[in-house]
Image 1 (cartoon, rainbow, N blue to C red):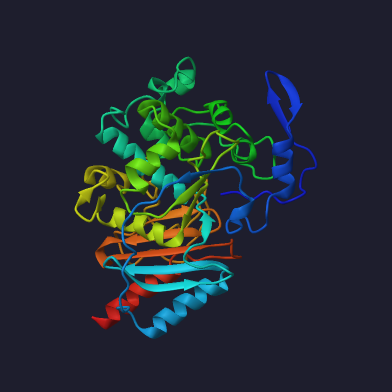
Image 2: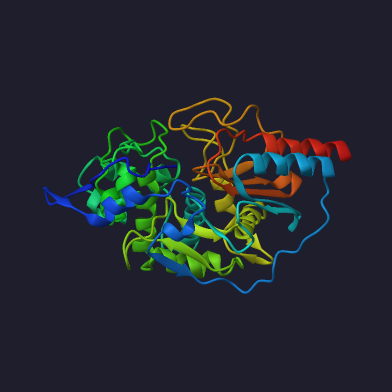
Length: 381
């Protein structure tokens, strides 16, 4: 999603009430942002703790794939700066590898994997009646948008990244919208200032303000802080372990477009929840019809659903670049994508969930590991 090179800017400026003011926290974050941004979890402060659940550890089983395929997959992951690589089949871990000083207890920054978690929470809020529908105008919950062109934007437009909000995502510009939200001390205010530049529903643009505003909708609709709602409605019932949210300032705003620090096994749990159409054990945490909407291909960008990717990016498009040398061999596959190639691949037809977290590699082929797995399974049949 974003990287700020340490030392790129010697100063940071924040505009408040028309006055240019120095803001030391913003300056410090720009100057010290770690090169190993995703795996150096200790840099990110302040944090809000999400209590974990009480589910037993994920069981393990013998792999249904050949040792040659396992060796090839893990070698690819290791050679591409991965810190963790896990494969779950039929609800059991069949491959689990760690490198670069990481283990099963290590946190990494989710980056945009967090967007899909946000979408799950929107579905829960709709099911419980706090939000009437994803077709609601955002201005119903965010009256700051009621008197300009943003009044026409719906929750669905934000979920599909087709809101028409300004696409100012330059990561080497301290004044860009994404840098202000990511490194600044008031992510909510930064997102609320992003204007509409075109009517909603006309074009896809991967704009992080869409997600930050969705988080604000959720908080105002439910009357709960984002972290509280996430912990009680999803994270703990899912059985996930304790996690962390990076806040913009002490007691400040969460950043739902990024910055959920979790353990790698808990991303398997998220993937399995999606694979099981919102169910954990016998409990329906997220409505199955919402999961179906999330992964339905329609709208102005058919490879993107409700804050989740639906197809391999074999060609570049607006707001993204080519990431795959071939289509996925599983037609029903979808995946969570975070900056630096944080990945959760979900293949319902194969009952597979694959997790890769780590630092940004020089190159990454999204088709390599999933298609290798599928070919090996098919060869064994």
